[in-house]
Length: 174
Image (cartoon, rainbow, N blue to C red; front, side, top):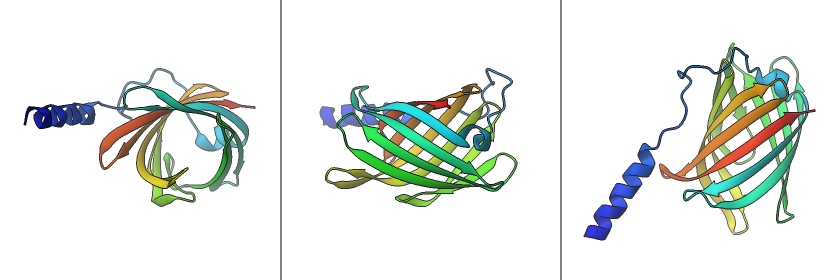
C-alpha cells in the first residue's frame, strides 16, 4: 500500500510540473512570425530526454519551408544519431492574425498553434514511429524567437496525460 501511495504521489507531482504560458511576460519586443522564419532553408539540432532527464536520442533536421500567403509547407528531413532517417511533411494553415492549424502524417486530427509576441505554442497528438511500430504521444510544443535567425524549441511529451519526456531543439535559419 505504501508503494502504491508513493507512486501515486510521484505521478501527481509529475502532472503538476508546469510548462510555459502565453500570458507570461515577454522577454523581448520581437514578433515571431512563423511564415517568415520558416520560409526557406532551416537547420535544427535536437535531443529527446526521458522523464528522468536522461538523453536517449539526438538528431539533426534539414527543413525546407515554402509560404504561399496562406499555407506554410515544411519538409523536415531527420537524421538520428544512430543513422536512421525520417521525413515529416507539415502543411500549416494561417487561420487568423496569430493562429494556425496543421497536419502531417501521423498527426491525429489537427495541430493547433498560437503566436504571441516572441512565442509560439503548438499542441498536437501524433503517432511517432518507433523500431517496434509507433507510439501515440501528445506534444505541448513551445518556440521562442531568440534572434532573427534562431529559435529555441522545448516540447513536452505526454502519454495518457503523464509526462514521458521532453524534446529540445535549436532552429537556425540559413
